[in-house]
Image 1 (cartoon, one colour):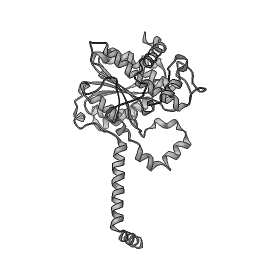
Image 2 (image 1 turned 30 degrees about the vertical axis):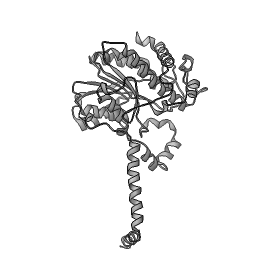
Image 3 (image 1 turned 180 degrees about the vertical axis):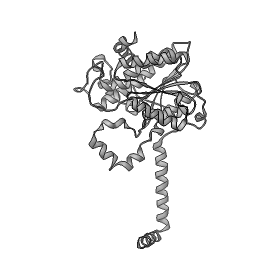
Image 4 (image 1 turned 90 degrees about the vertical axis):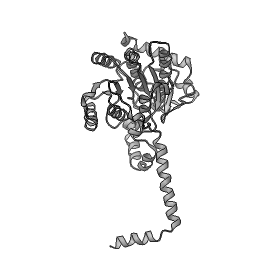
Amino acid sequence: MNFINSITSTLSAITPTQYGYGALGLLGLYFGKKYFNGGTVSADLLKSNLSGRIVIVTGASMGGIGYETSRVLHSLGATVILVVRNEQAGKEAREAISKQNGHADRLVVMLMDLTDLESVKKFAQEFKSKFNQLDILINNAGVMACPHSTTKQGIEIQFGCNHLGHFLLTLLLLDMIKKSNGKVINLSSLAANSSVSFVNKYATFAMDTLKGDCKQTMSTHSLYKRSKLANVLFTKKLSRELALDTTTTAQTYSLHPGAVSTNLGRWLGRAVTFILMTIMYPIMWFLLKSAHQGAQTTLHLALSDKSKLKPGSYYSDCHENIGNPCEDSIELQDRLWNNSIEICKKYLE
């Protein structure tokens, strides 16, 4: 009773002006959070009918952008291929989505390791043996600032996983995408928006800079930025290639999902993670998007009519944006493309 009397006494001492400031503060927090949550898919697009469409989403494990993307597209009628490295993670994602949406028959779990080009080729072959169309390929999976290491083929791990694995996957499935007049959606990052000096020093994409763990030449964060720029450049070059083929209306886009609270930053270190998740949690909650909010631009690109999108462009918060001052460099696009082809040559035969 004394506790209640104390609260009542405290509240009665608050002046109308203080109530007003408190209300303004709450409104500021509300609209601030809405701002950081970013753009959302229009209600009309969320009424789309994707019945009969086949969609591939890499990195579809629970808790991430790929999972939320898969869940929404499946709810609209699509058959979604949940691509994961770990079979158990795939089963959990499939069970969770089917529990919410039903229609488990339209959810297919398939395994692929983007750090092994042999695994990528095996996945493409298996997919083609099961399906005869591909309407949307969402290259979503990735790693960020992981320890210096290499792929199975000796390529720097972040470039190999975030770009090269998806590059090979896209080319192996491009005939199906063209036939379906489909879309390729590449998840990049704001990290791609690097300076010209960074590009000239770290992101020339010369062959010798792509091999080995790059520990002596670049930090893990710089390697992440390079890999995300590669996503944008690949999209630009692929768009140019698609435009040369008059038999298809297939298009490609890249995007920044926003600063999203997922397990992508799991390599930041236990100490850093502890600090962020305890001391700074309220700030992080305010500034970061949820995985569902982070999926909005992907969904916008997947669901929008191609006539309302710009081929090869970079999007964020459901709008076209500028990715990098060097993104329109034909020389840089071509060097990345040609060297990627060279590395993947054996697996493209």
